[in-house]
Length: 462
Image 1 (cartoon, rainbow, N blue to C red):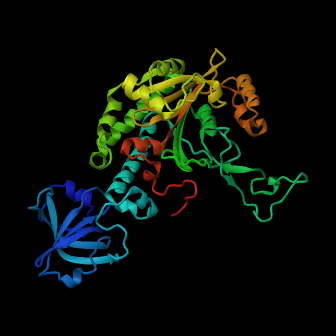
Image 2 (image 1 turned 45 degrees about the vertical axis):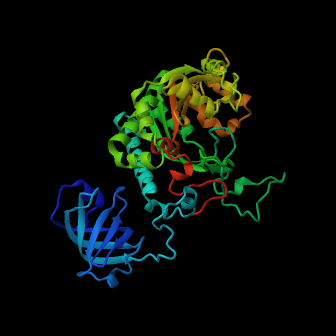
Image 3 (image 1 turned 60 degrees about the vertical axis):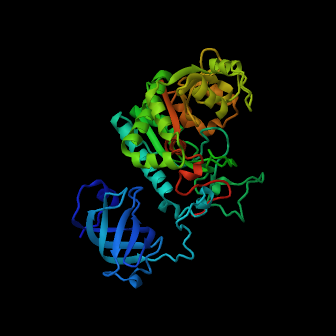
């Protein structure tokens, strides 16, 4: 008989039918006559109760059935007399696929801290919390592809190994096949990368944006969705060394088009989560963040406020609030500033635009004032910046001058500069950190708890 997933059984109205269910034991309890097993297969938060008549299946046979064990149960699906559950399985036969020693299995029926669960990340998807988070993560990844496909964007695969530094920050992981114990040297004593696999120094990408722009200037509209890497020694709840980014780029999009795309995209994703992940969201709202569902609806129900950076600074300075960090013109705003604008002043999401050029990347289009660029950051309640983007500089002379001004390696960026020499066009794009999106959608507060196997400084287990 075909195995049925627990989520399908719990959603169906079928009773008085034979079923086969497979999964992992969450709990087992009972008395002299009957045992009750809560079984979960990862398809939903809910367990299905398996009722075992000890006259049919002896206690001796049930000894290996402990928390964490994996079972196959053949039985009869019937209406349940118990409160809070519609159906249960009356077991006819139980097969133990894999046992779990109750003395050593770490996920016993008790509360576990998130810190402890990070130490056993290979097992934490079996918990209700991480099952919910990872199902939501899947749904958001699916919705991203669905959205862009519906809106005429092409999925564009940018390289993970690159010789360019998109952000110009230098915090990159190096990729090499050279022998670290016997490095080849040039006559000047520097490492001779001409002998390396690619014939030059290469790194893991920090962003697919530069290559994505090349795609947009040929295909019109593209998006990237893949892993990116930052070798920053940042031990904060919002930073990881490996994370996924969504980066759309669109030819003929100016800043206003970019803002409209970002707002529509975010609302689509949140609406998709509410429409397709409600059981998991309700669980997260109940267990971890009582305001989660309210915040998700808050974003859907409000138009995003467009706000000039300069005006934002004036609002912050006039607020009378004592912020931990300064908020003078020219400063890069911190999360406390961003959240004040969203949660207290405007009471809706904010898109902050026209930042000082000195705190933004080299590729952003310069405004006529010579001081600001057509940048945009989307600010959300509870999290601050969730999207960063801009209209890109399309003028070769201005872009070339900015590269020189910042002392960047023009020889490494020749191909990027060339796109402004031959058929340059207005174009825009943005980056959305997938894991930060998941922090917002799940209500979790640490990026380590929305990634299956987080990579952070000094941590690369599993």
